[in-house]
Image (cartoon, rainbow, N blue to C red; front, side):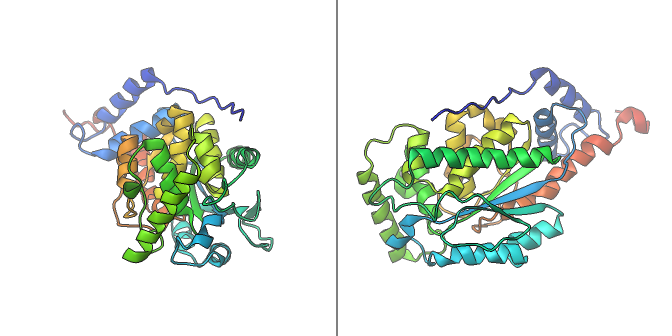
Length: 344
């Protein structure tokens, strides 16, 4: 599968200048803690001493999963389409949080197993009516995987061309924690039991059933080599689109806000292809979904928030967004010692 993203390394020369600007603000060195590191990262992502957050946007990628028919979720597959309708009507958690923080929210039909009515905030990009059940066959063909990657990249390009320089990706898809667990296991070599969790709220018996199904699926696909093969075998159309979206956003020098476990697993695939993508990523929160902390550890990343979330949808992104705003504002508007006439 040809991939031709070009992700520019960040400027080491600018890093020293940015740090000097931060250190000259009217505060003891390091007194704003992680906000200082965040300001530095955002400046480096945008390659400027005066970064800005323009038209921030969250894309929610929605898709169904064939593995749902094997009983790995506490909810039926029909919930995916129902939740898409909830997003569009403004009643979901992310809808409320996006309104609160004035974040543009768009929903992408990557592969929902339903015919969705047109809506101004719904982007029709369906690859198929959900993936195949990877318990018996690959979730998607290599061709459909590539289509999804390129579709995700194209959607990010459209937002960039519209003036957006700060973007985040949420997801919705019954069964997608199963896909994410297998991708994490295949691409980190961590034990499957460390990667798979309760998802939508499985009880102990249901969780054991899920683990049994995932173990069987691994035996059906014994020759997985590389991130794209794993993505085609176990992924979802929404996960594959997020992979392409991450890579295009990094190529365009956009600041990327990373949500929870499933969004993080899509990033895992992306960074196995292009490790430089991580330079452009801010990790919004650590989820209570089993495996997410280990995934962050794999990235050597520290999340901004720990609120025991396990919702998806981009909810962690919306909650962490004000911290990005604060980092930008202190960097651009806080007085220096010289400007304020303060001795130091």
